[in-house]
Length: 206
Image 1 (cartoon, rainbow, N blue to C red):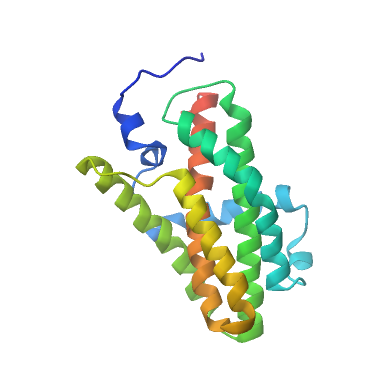
Image 2: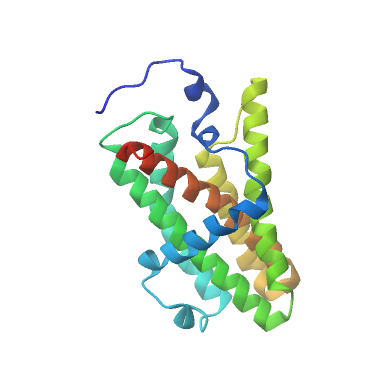
């Protein structure tokens, strides 16, 4: 049953990201794996095909997804405060798909850059999980303290910044690329998790 939110509820003040519980990084491994797999529905390519592309090419494909993703993120931020909206379903599905596609492409860029340069890809993959874990704890701490909390739009903005920094670093500072990519993946993973949670709520799961 669809409805309108009650103005001034706690979840509205805290923001939609507080729908996600604080989670240790190691427990996000399965979520990351699901996001990368789900992203194939967006990219339409096999891992072997994506792995033949350059990091710059992969990340340019991420940039192409960001305008539509920013619109979906804005709508979710305004309307996704824990309430069920029938018209939100399509936007949530779009955000989940685009976030997953961007995660998949960033992950492939991380793998290709690691193969080319020789850094420990497993270490940076774990680093990409530490980012959303830390942000979830920060989000709940800020919400409980009455401070401005993290927002979906803000997370997409920071992910975009990190992706642009990674593109610029490919030719000038190759060892800086994995740090930028792990941050981007981590922030995008928050959006994927949020879209998954909102989708489940709208379907009435659980």
